[in-house]
Amino acid sequence: MAVIAIKVAVVGGAFLLFGQANALFSLSIPALMLHAGLLLAIAILAMWPNVHGRIAVPAQESASPETKAPHIGILLHSAARYDALAWLLTGGRERVFRERILSFAKLKPGDAVLDVGCGTGTIALLAKQKVGPNGRVEGIDASGDMVARAIAKAEQAKLPITFSTGTAQNLPYKDREFDVVLSTLMFHHLPKQGREDFCREALRVLGPNGRLVIIDFVKPPHQRSFFRFHRHGHVDLDRVAINLEGSGFNIVERGEVGTKGLCYLVAQPVSSMPSPA
Image 1 (cartoon, rainbow, N blue to C red):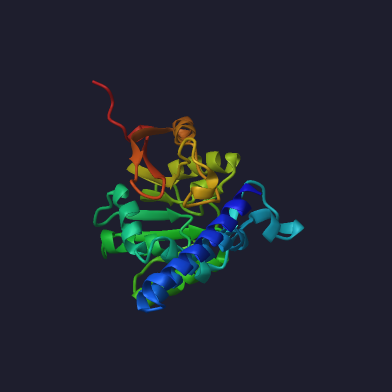
Image 2: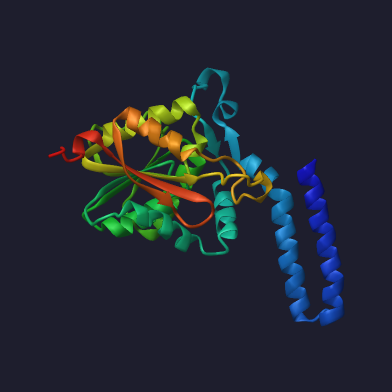
């Protein structure tokens, strides 16, 4: 009810501003632009919870009773709508936003990269450009809709990337196959057991001196959920670090991304860490 009241207040304030805009600009082009901007902001505030609720659904609700699997987490559907919302919520600067996220992975030419929870493939496409022709990028997502769009985007960009449908808890790859495993804005979709399973699977598929990079939403203290960029979920970074250490990782770096309430964490297998002198 509090959220509804706030939204009603926003709408009322917008109409008040409309009246002031008419008086100031007499419905000139600046006034029309102001109206359009305010209407867009109101639409996002009013529709985002409902739209996101249709995009993100519990995996077990989307499956038949015969195909239900425990601990899969939240599946995202409506891939085209997801891309449109990502563009809108980054102010048309999605590439800059994704480049910022990917910078924490410190990819090098020739790296073998696995993007877990790859979504529509935007991060994987950028990763392939960084690792070059001698590098390898694969993406995996539990949503067939997302994977289909990712494949189409890779074909359009003429980038050789393999996308597969599968879960983070049961990665269909060989042991020690990748140099880097990415989890960008995916970890919070997993339930508790699923997070632990993913940590173990990431350790298994990482090669010597490999690294796991997790970037996700962290809820700021004392901030109401209405004002969060992302309303669906967040992670406790300290708890994530504990899960990783319990799975055989050492935390080598962590901090704030600097935008959208995101934090990052970089971990390496204990076996790849230098022995103390």
